[in-house]
Image (cartoon, one colour):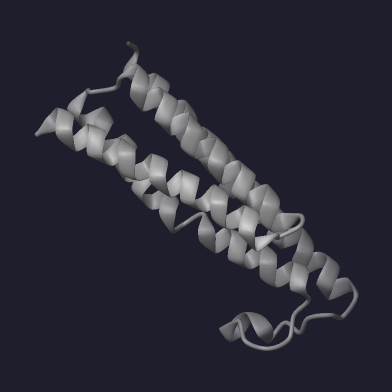
Length: 137
């Protein structure tokens, strides 16, 4: 199997992260035009902001929490040259869960649905790590 195939899910995650960055910027522009946020807010990220800005910011922060373990595992798999079909499947399921989580957060932000999707992604990542460690050790 071509080991570089594992980079496609990572690229998918990077695209999601860039999308959320753009969303944050557009929300800032929107809030600034309507005088809903003061520029001083960005000094310490404290103070009043519209909900859509706070949700967007939290969504961006999420892209640097659980996905760190995803990126790290992909790096290790590449170093060990151990890319399997199962790795690709688990990687894409994880990426899909992150896209769905992001969509829920930026649309309805319904916490029970968001929590289920988060748990799915976390479970996939845990299973993937266990499988990798079992195969390497």
